[in-house]
Image (tube, rainbow, N blue to C red; front, side):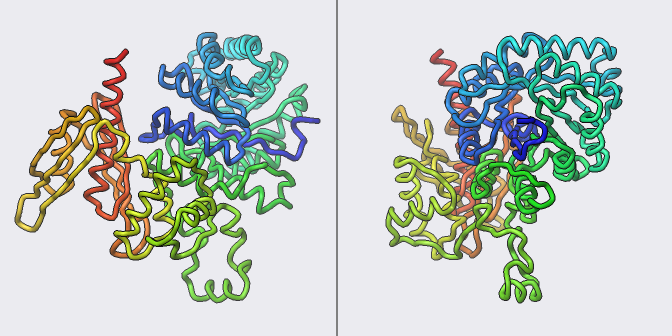
Length: 513
């Protein structure tokens, strides 16, 4: 089949590579694996798992995903040099389906100021790198970085050369989000009209959102013949972010008559996947975010509500059920059984094994004893945070805080360690949260620098859970922790301890080795 003209748009997810490059979005290996599994369930075609040459940790995470995830092609990014390419191959080679993605900048401003290379040198570098990568892997993608600001005749020359060298996908990046839709459409049309052999490969689009046009530009590329879109969950990424996967997928699905293509994405997995990524990265989804935001299917204006009661289609162009947002107001309660809980978890789009389900159910029952009303969002928070505070080596056994107007806040803390130690600390702080943090640091001996503290209400009411995300610095590295509880101070302490435990486990691992 002609790769450029079929009716399937390949969804290339780069949440774990480009998305993770957003400030504050770095993930641990376990967090990356959790996201990768949700992308697998979402039925994405390609997972760009990372940049293996960037660090030993990035290599390990890409390799772990390649060895664990089945279904999607697992892709590793590489600059156009042999060391990067070899490193990428060793990271992805154990996947059932592997891809190497090589890139080099081609625009004049990048040639002069970043690479300080002539056109001919860049062209030769691109050819040699694709040829070398082809020795390891049949599936090779090439990207001319900053393509949207590259001279069209030179861009066509590079694209034709890498196709001849063996590239199977050629990606056209709008690296700095500079293009507008008609201009981006014209780039693809020019390449299709002027590049020999382009009908044999798949054209791809990779757009950034600096002008808020990443989704619009990606859709323009699809209309021009692109059959791969590179995107991220929730649109996370460097600067203003990337093309949002959920937005481009639902645009193609909702406006099928305009695009005449399909993606193969299980759209009912969009909302749970969005929640998982938001939870893992600490980048909460704005309420007015298209498709997956809390307000995406909310109707407050009277005239809208009247129309909705008559016919949902008056103000809803998509059904909330189509993106996994089928939900009820009040759900379950402290007398609900395990079977009903499992059924609701599955209805919300989450897949848990028996061990995970049991742990979540136990936490749900404890939460139901403290809350009058239980909502779907409460169940989601339980699923997202069930391991927080329970992964050790340190555990909070008791925490009490005292605070009030005109008094110094105090925290009394009892911590236990897996080795049997039990420590008690009593400290003061500017408030109950600060006092609790100071007590945890004093007990564990690990001093952190708090950079950001966020609190988000999970549901409504005076007994609602609060979800706390903390970002800290330790030894010039950034760490993030999150937790949820009906007690904000308790949630904050659990989130802080999550970071402490992560650092402690890293120390223990190094000492063991």
